[in-house]
Image (cartoon, rainbow, N blue to C red; front, side, top):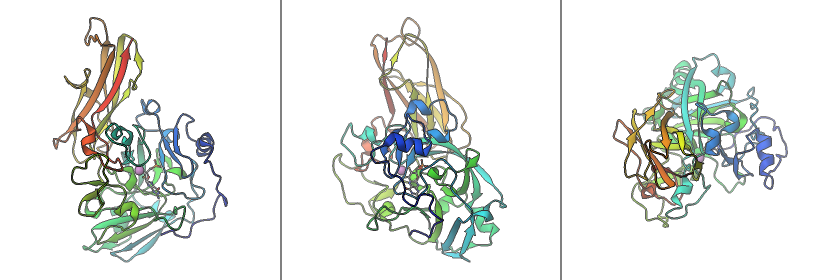
Length: 400
Ligand SMILES: Nc1nc2c(c(=O)[nH]1)N[C@H]1C(S)=C(S)[C@@H](COP(=O)(O)O)O[C@H]1N2
Ligand SMILES: [Mo]
């Protein structure tokens, strides 16, 4: 539900429908980003711009808006003086928390991968087309968030959650483009997030940029970006999950296998919300279809999971998946962060690997301590909206 907002910065928000570069410039984003939707603001980071940054700079972080907050399409901070957060539902007493109430409370920091549940959707199209923005690898980034943990907020304000509360539902202050469309809100299982959820006010050491949900964002480490509600205006503790279309109909995957190209009914019994991130790894150097000279070369990328257990191995294949070798990886900045991995190799010639075929397929896959890994063919998880792609990453290169 939209809540009365502060004075609009742009009474008539500028429209960039015909001008994607104008949108990037207005948002303060890198001009090399790929604009998928210039009306609400949806932009992907090409993977070559992501590589090499341990924490994604704000200018390079992808943007995904389902709807718009006037004045929200900029990297500048959003005015916070009149920002309120309503906390209600199965909690006593319900309260309106002012933005300024948060600073005096104990602060916490978390580094976490923010990834759209649709990231990698384009790869499902090898099997059958899916609905929605055709993200490749760049609907993700890694950020350092700071704010107040939900548990700390409740304890500090003497609020008690009724044991009947099973879900936490978050609403943002942005509102749908037309009244016929449901407002964006999402629910997550309360017991799973109570200790980790962060009411974040800072990203990478600065007030959260408006476009990334400032001044206040719900950060749920380990969860898909879709659940990390921006412009947080209300939290509800409830015994059931949101009935908003975004939660009840969209942002869900099927529990059973779906025949590619079909669209079974979405029901609460047959689907799960896109909650915890699947284990995933990507190659970010070299790039798909890159021409690589014979000689020394470093292959690199990142791997991560939902933070519930450790990543124990990352494996690289230089021959399209026939043989695999383990690669070295660095410790992440915390359990919800990326594990940067790399392998120093010699392309061509007599030194390993010696590839006769000038076109070579590199693949990477990660394993965690729960025995979870990535499917060789990610399309076994095909779903009509193309969520949660976590197939083995594959990059073809030409050795010249
Ligand atoms: N209020 C609000 N929160 C939102 C959204 C939105 O449209 N409105 N989009 C969600 C989706 S689908 C994603 S992937 C992330 C994107 O975060 P970013 O734009 O900061 O990269 O925000 C999520 N939170
Ligand atoms: Mo998303």
